[in-house]
Length: 190
Image (cartoon, rainbow, N blue to C red; front, side, top):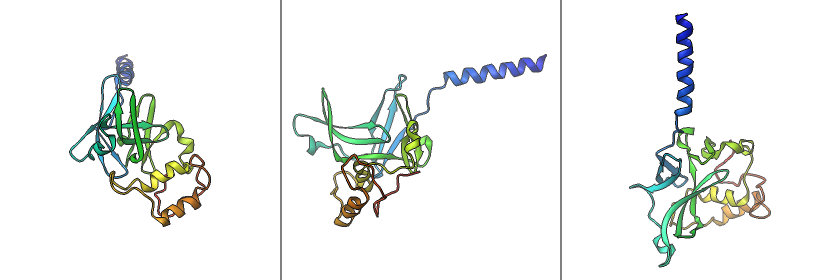
């Protein structure tokens, strides 16, 4: 009888522990260029980026006098950290100022809303889209992957050789899937 009570108590504690445990969020996010940002979430899982000592500078020169420079994030299949120019109605960014979040393990990938991200091929990818992990992305994403190691605020332009490789591997429009991996680009498939 005592054994049954102990087993039942352990099962009850395990069940209660699972319900009460909040998702574990990383404290730092790293992007393709090696830039690091703080990742802070409140009890309602509303998260924001914060600048750390090694974070890149704010896009002051890009924003002009009307907009406030900041950093923000967007997500879908992957998470992009972007230098942005913001006002009370939202923000705008430029492709050359965004980089994808990279990782070495799942623990380095956040949960955003209902979207759980896991580490796949060195990028934090949306676990709900796992069926696409082995596919090449569209041209727009591939260009960001190919140029993403470039630190922000440095020239962000494909060399003629890289541009030709992207054109060959990703014919068609910016939203068309690439057919091959451009030479010299990191492979996002996992």
